[in-house]
Image (spheres, one colour):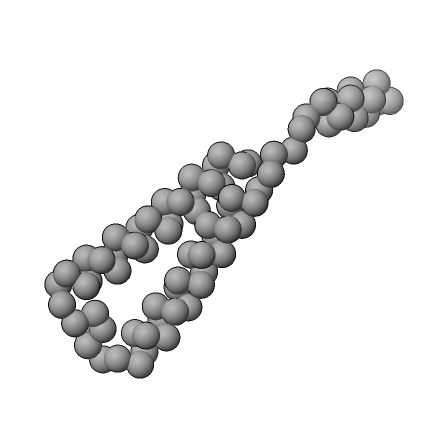
Length: 76
């Protein structure tokens, strides 16, 4: 049992923890975007008004989600 604990501790010492700053930034941007978007959506009954604006909101949201997902996997 002591040998197993020693092996686990030795393995933990060799592993370098990666920086999660990129994920914190991308995840934070996604969260802020969600709050801003919901606030604008509740204040305006016709938001977004045009088809182009709808596509822009969807594209920006997809970009933020993809960035948060990618940085979560990369920094894991």
